[in-house]
Length: 498
Image 1 (cartoon, rainbow, N blue to C red):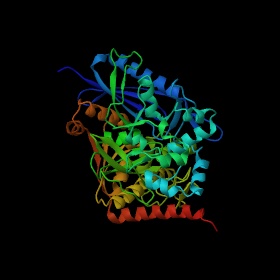
Image 2 (cartoon, rainbow, N blue to C red):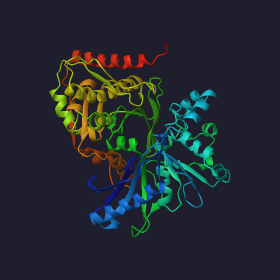
Image 3 (cartoon, rainbow, N blue to C red):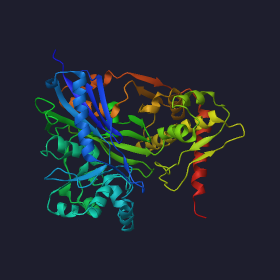
């Protein structure tokens, strides 16, 4: 049988990866390259779109050169991308009018404050499933429209493209022939109506962005155009799948049915639950988005985003200096005194879901005279699991789902102490796949399934996982979690007026 390959491109916040998969879905090779983080004295974060495009071309070329495969045997390409990051470019020239404004950047805060004063926040959430925030793409695009000279005039002439990184890559890779985005990315812009599955004129009006500037909506496993990566391939190959990175990880984990969950442990964490074909709107501090639209069928998710998870380990290592390496945290956590009741509430930049309090600070709580290095490290690791447990419990309540299994990915999942504690505090199985590149895997798998290279049941049936099951008694679990809730409450109370 002739070999067939699929390429996944994972364009993330830190860099761009190219991944090569065989016809069984096995990851054969990866290449990656970082791009510059452009951060000014205000904390505004940008990326150079041209650098991202150049790196995408370069990593695919390097992947093909290193693998030595027959380039004509590549059946399709899938793209996953950093979500919410927004940019605008000239439709005629293909040149960006400004750098990409990164999801971390809060420069649209004043625009959101203005809309809140107008009483628009409730309507925006009802239409998008998202609370009004500069985190999402709409406020970033509005900032570009209001502050970059000549942009509004381009928009009025119908010569401006406003989009997310996926639509930028599709546009450039197809030499301007296609301007498309998928439903998962659209649902994170705050310009998309998640019940009507369309760009929303009223939402666009709130932010001053003409709908004509937005990309054509395409199924997540649909055809986004063809590209030869500027002469890298002998003939053009189809871009047959696009997913936002967290959605790609959910797909790559095989969470294709209602009630299935994944957590990505990165700098922060994205927790997602597949809730099926109907949206569930919650006031519990979690948001509603689309998972994807594949095979002509739409699925929705509940999602919670946490600011500090893996970054807690980095803080303990680089800033506090009580860890020599991330691996050492596992050893110290195992040595810590079981009777110690220290908690870390990692509100270094406020607390994300479900608290949404940007005004609080981090704190260690419950320390005793015998609290030492090991206990502080264990408190840091535990804070990761407790924050995720907060979200999982609320999702189960909102969706009316009892028992869940958590599928996890990201660097901290190599910490076996953390994974066991996560299982214990959730009273749920935790599954860690052998492969770590879940966002790129998800995009490649969606593309491969859409192109007929893969069959989903066979593909996900081959995934190898390490399983952690609960060992903690219910009494101990409840005591520990109650202690966490008390610690969070103490931090929140400190900032209450009066």
